[in-house]
Image (cartoon, rainbow, N blue to C red):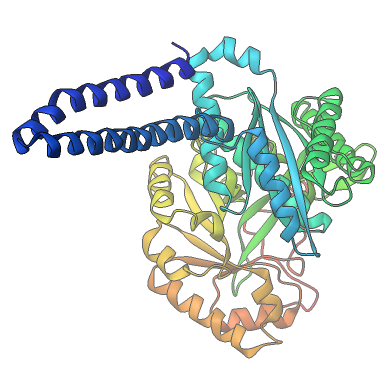
Length: 505
């Protein structure tokens, strides 16, 4: 039965029930209470007017409720509980009136690529679960000041305020991509999203124009390629197109094993004997030349490629070190970096676990490095994961230690084997005496928990000598040794002790 007929039927039934009860009982009560005919006549008249007043109030309440329900159907999508287009447009106009001058309102159109195929593959129930998961994730991610809407069967709208700078706009889109990937990954894999973006006031000064601009940007993005982003503004779109081209090249480089790894030795203090290596990913682009990991790793994380990069690093490391007979001989420990996204995503972590199980010869020497911020996302969940992976024989190192706010709690809770003092502390310890005091405290805490400490970013002999005097266990940095290719690494004999220019050992 249509909702409008249901509402009309409820109103009619409620009115009929009240009228029937009034007729059945009101006359009996009046005749029982009053016997004088004149009084009875006056009371019957009053009762008639009272019936009109009560039924009018009842009708007002029922009709108001029905109209509010109908209005809410236009304002809120019942499935996702997000705004519908008319209310989204109205609230965008309201936000534009009070947005600070230094900020911009980003209006974003998000489209689920090939949603009809997704429906066919998953079935309608699972497809609905996907839509609800996306809506719930967006609600969890954004504050109440951000407007969220469902603009079509497979389209979502977001309007958020951000600082009017390229860096802030890029960061907002990156975080949105990660949130969408998380929402889709909780239901199924292989889902991608195409995005169109409009910015106030350059792309429109009212909601109608901004929504039209973001929709046109989305249409242009879909013509470009699935999973891409486009800005309505040509200058920003050119920058985004360059970024999308880099992403395409990265996918190709991963598929064709065109990435490479290098090894940065780590040394025991004070005798400077090699204790292990940190494996670092490198990309030499055929046209762009060297592309920094600081550029392509965030791109890989944003578009769900971090597990493929980790798999390549692990497999390539095992291949190179095994072929050159370095594992356990010249190189007793191998440290591999794992992204925060990968460590805190169950599907990506499962992919990593499967990769590690396929490389059993590397496991006795392997140490996973995760950043302190990744470990602190959910420290109890992190501890559970670490215990599970340590049962496979893995060691754990915490990178960038000291940059978070709960380092002591992390030492107490997590089964870690090593911490790495962030390079910013090493750089600043001769500028600010407080930093040296902090390093002493870290060393003291680590000693109490029987955790090894590595200082990274050693660039001067002064830094090296100070850390040796303070009792730091290990160190790495350009002063000691730059990252080496496998051909350079194999030239280092077993038991090698580094000797730098001063002759200090």
